[in-house]
Length: 318
Image (cartoon, rainbow, N blue to C red; front, side):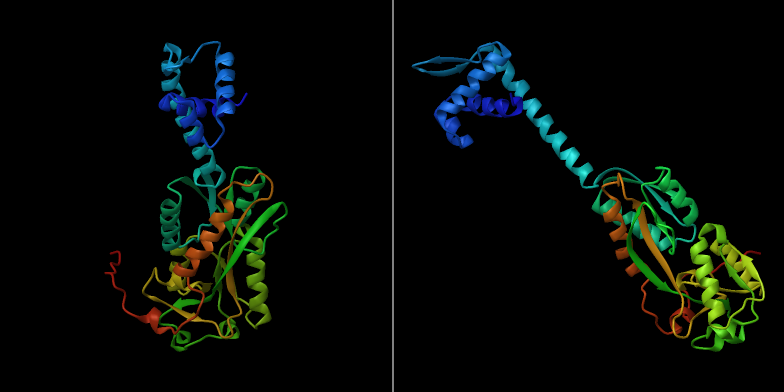
C-alpha cells in the first residue's frame, strides 16, 4: 500500500467532505477514490468517515488522522527537498583540498560564490600540496582537491584546467626589471626560487625541464613554500622566481615581468574520486575555473599595471 498517496487522497477528501469534488481536484475518477479510502480504513482498522445520504463527515479517528496526515505529508515534502539538495550538491560538507600558494583573492571569491550559490553546503578546507591532496583523495579523506598538473590521476576525475602565465619575480633594482619582457635564457646564471619538489613533483620537474630547454640552468635551487618567504629571498637577492602576477602584488619592492613567448603556465584543476564522487565536486570544479578567470585573468598585459602605485599604504617593519 502506498501510504503517502492514500494520505494525500484522504486530506483532500477530509477538507472537501465530498468525494466527487475531491476526485475532481485530484484528477481521478470518484470510484477509485472511494476504494482507496476504504483500503486506508482497512489498513488502519478504523472508520474515517460517516457516510450518509445527507453527506460525509469525519469520525473522531478521521479528525485525528487529518492533523497527523498533514504533518506527515509536510515532513515528506521537507525530506524530499532535503535529499534533492544533497543529490544536487547544495547541502552537506565538501572536504576540499587547496594548495598553500592559493591566492587570498581566489580563496575569498571562491568561498563567497559557494556561499551564494549553495548556502547549505559547508566547504571544509584543508591546506595541502598536490601530493598530499592526492593521497587524501585516495584514502577517502577529501572529496575534491585543487592541484597543479601534471599529476597521476589514476582513479580520479579531472575537471577543467586553468592555465595562468608565469612571469619573473625579481627586485625592482635588477637590470632585468627594465625590460618589458624577459627571455628565459636571460635568467641563466641566476638562482631559482621555487616550491619544494615533494609538494607537486610533476609540476616541479616540468618547470625545471622547460627552463633548461630554453637555456636557463639555475645556478642554484632554493626552496620556498610560503609566498612571503619566497618574496623575502627575492628581495635579498638570493634568486628569481617564476610565479603568477598575483604573487608580486604582495610586495611593492619587487617587479613582475612576463616571459617572452609565454613558455610557462601554472596549471590548476580540481580532481575528485571517480567512484563515490561527492555530488558537489563537478560543480565546484567548474566554479574554480570561473573564479580563476576573474581573479587570475590568463591574458597577459603590459607591465605598467604592476608598476602602478598601490592603492593602499605600505608599512615596513622597523
